[in-house]
Image 1: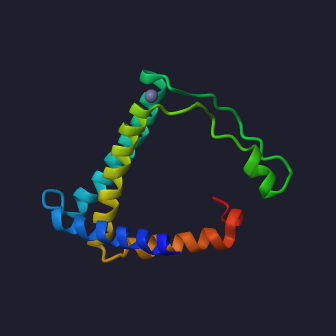
Image 2 (image 1 turned 30 degrees about the vertical axis):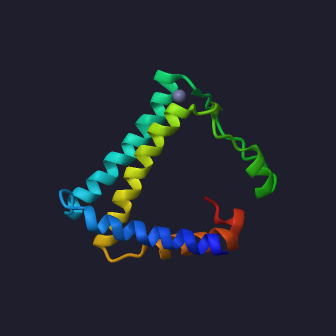
Length: 135
Ligand SMILES: [Zn+2]
């Protein structure tokens, strides 16, 4: 419980810090397009883990959702990732995710949204509904 509160405090602090440093891309248009850019950069970094590094590969095929319970599906539906992301790729992907979170915080600031409340609400939803969130 204390860890959860500490994490929400860190989220609030992070969002506040973003509001203190964002100058050049403060326009909502810059923020929206930066979010798109970093979303693409995350996907690009994952793709480069496959095509350049080779630490992971993707073996995709049709998902078999079967006729079982949601719990069964949780265990049978595939990520299609083979292998493990190496430390170098983890570092690159993590940096892109960090930048994405920066602009997500900036978007929240621009619109007067509290990211920690959003995170808490989403956490409570998935905690309450579990696999029935159907995501
Ligand atoms: Zn790698």
